[in-house]
Image (cartoon, rainbow, N blue to C red; front, side):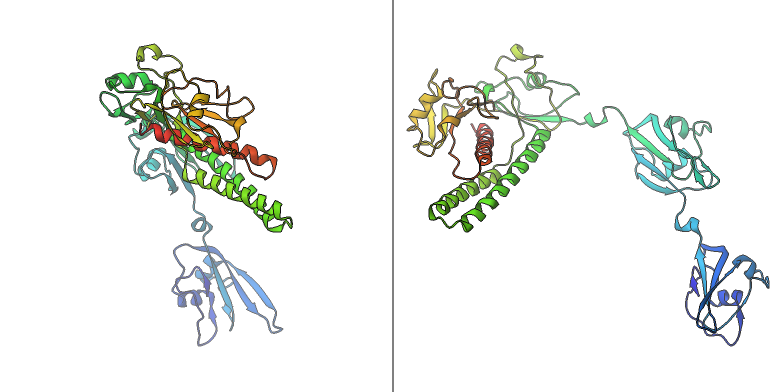
Amino acid sequence: MLGDVRVPGTYRTSGDIHISDAIHLAGGLAPDAQATDAQVFRYMPDSTLKILNVKLESALQGSPSDNIVLTPRDRVLVHRNAAATDPATVYVKGEVARPGRYPLTGDMRISDLIRAAGGLKESADTKAADLTHYVWEDDRQVTGQQQQITIADALTGDSEKNAVLNNGDVLSIRQRAGWEDLGASMTLRGEVVHPGSYGIRPGERLSSVLVRAGGFGPAAYPYGALLVRTEVQKLEQRSYGELIQRVREQQANLKLTAVSTPDPDQRLSAEAAFVQWQTTLDNLVTSPPTGRVTIQISSNIRAWENTARDVTVRPGDILMIPKRPSYVLVQGQVYGPTAVAYRPGKSARWYLMQAGGTTNMANKRAIFVVRADGTVIGNHSSYWLTGNALSVGLQPGDMVVAPEKALGGPPIWKTLFQNAQVLSSITTSAILAAHY
């Protein structure tokens, strides 16, 4: 006996038996067995296999035409009911306790499905929901229809609003407008009168939160304010990942060149470039993006309140107001990378000279400045940079960077290398701003 009987297996008999007897030996039909038809597989005397179709329900009732006599080696196959194999189901999505797929019961309605899914969440919009409803005729699926329904009316038992569901229907319970804003907050740190976490309302601006925090403290340096946002950090991480991947690809090509070239000078040049690329890669990997949003604010909140500079805050934002630093940083390929005491009105060129000037390894045409507010100034030929970096006057907390020349490699490496140095410097500037 094979298929949907209670105890499938091979049975020894004392003589010829009928199909009904065989099913009885196998413990009877399983609960989900199909009683309409079954097959008997029979080996003929010439060793060929023949299939006999019988009406199982009729055989069990003793009908001679279907309750045939079985011969040795016959195999009886009882099928499982198709409805049990692929039962009719409905789906509920969205704001219910247990969204998912549920079996369709007789005359099942919208309210029944919601209760089966554990009921509505507090976040559910009871005014409007979306029902994709399918109509079945003659075992053929007719095009589904979208219907707008009112959940509150369906739950009261209104038969007109509480529609009967069909196989495949999908009920989507939407979330209340503004629900995600419940419990939204941002954090203020550093030189504000009352640091801490503050609840924020939809559309609230930075100036409003600062006023609620008592404004800036006496040692505050708003020019160097650091606003960190989670969404921005995720976008930056994607760009970082793409840049790191491109550096790795170019590095692999360069390594192959260093191994395969017969010329000693070319080999040394390729090896030096390979080391430079590895250092660049390490700097990118160990200096992940901070998610900084560049803002330009001043100590006089009223001066920029409700202007384009007054950004709308988001849940999870962190605003760090540092103390006023007393120096300008000079980094990169200079003889004495250091923090130079701030002198009002002095240009980036002056601070560069205080650090001993650039080394032979410096890319003098690509020198750039990272402002304390996160903006970057450099020469016009760079994708990242705008302006003339050396002539601009600097403020406390600004950073002058003399980038390194790209050693060897294809032309694309010069662009990748410069971008990598700018990104690393921006990250370093943000980290330092949080520790002024």
